[in-house]
Length: 85
Image (cartoon, rainbow, N blue to C red; front, side, top):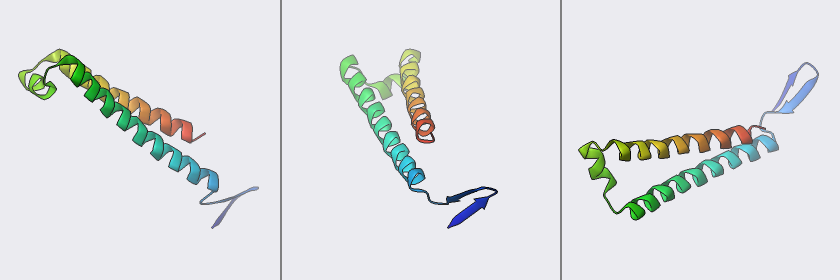
């Protein structure tokens, strides 16, 4: 399907756009897998149960888990931002 806006014509499903979409999905999956790996590595190094510490109200463990979620958000945002270029 061709779209026309003034002097510009482009395909609705451009090859570059599809490649960028695939790149962003792949980057998000890799980022989430890296975050899960980081969580599991942290869990092995610290030698205590993170879910039970969160139930007890341990604020420090909650901040670490929150940091992991922030890391996921940053990774997803950067990957999507880079794929739009």
